[in-house]
Length: 359
Ligand SMILES: Nc1nc2c(c(=O)[nH]1)N[C@H]1C(S)=C(S)[C@@H](COP(=O)(O)O)O[C@H]1N2
Ligand SMILES: [Mo]
Image 1 (cartoon, rainbow, N blue to C red):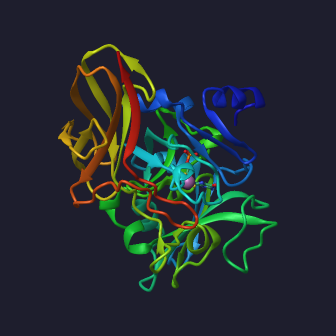
Image 2: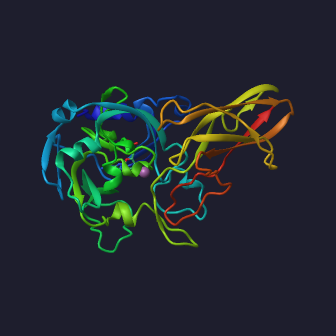
Image 3: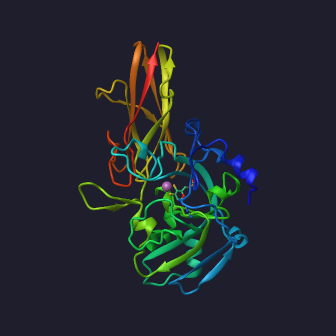
């Protein structure tokens, strides 16, 4: 576990949005790298850092309950995947009316290399019962909740971070869900869930339970503050929906927002990702008037890894330009112009707009 000084150093390059619980965005420059250095990876926690005894209990509706130590997890076959994690509240600040909840700008998104054991292999050791429905994941963190609970029976004074996944997804080898103990080649740090955490590819990062302490197979659908209270899309005009897969989104990393550039050819570039399929197209607009030009999109370097896109802009007209970017994924999902408003402010994947002055 890091000392106080080490923790302070680990946090020094981030843009803090809440000191307690500690929540911080990546600096904008971090979005330019293919893999986000650990010290630039955003952090989102609902409670103070917990103590953890380095064991993982697996129980509930299983034939063979067991306890795994960190060493036993490390002794299982290890797998490493680069995974883009985005907080479901990323971009909340642009929603109107502004929802409650942490005021995230647009930098609660990062990509790290996560190494660990596959969840489905751990579950197979415990042998889930045939009537299992959900798998419940409990973090070691708990305490007074800093937001207003949505569910009437939530204990606001001592709440634990608990999430669930359908058993069919958790036990699916193709889902490649990790119980990760390494991030970018180093043991997990405190802020990212030491000693081990879940990494659920393609899902908004709320599913990736940090400081994982218990896994239980349930024979009924899980109900809880972080599952059916918060992290639900409460739409204005239709039934609520759970927050699950990341919505398709592109970000501009160059030229910088508000920058001044000399007339000439400039490469507009950035990142794009989606939880509902690889990004198949990125379009750029230069005036705000509706014309869209196709950018070049690099194939994904891994199935869960954001993609690079670029567009050569013949920036010869002197003056202010409105640069916008819009991604489409293989499932046909396209970014909307306007944030998809919902009461708790999740899943803002609206088209990004930056202003650039050509002189
Ligand atoms: N135990 C626990 N796991 C958690 C959380 C939490 O508060 N407690 N926050 C979740 C949310 S909302 C996000 S966005 C990610 C953030 O992971 P990171 O801090 O490693 O970026 O962790 C998820 N896992
Ligand atoms: Mo989040």
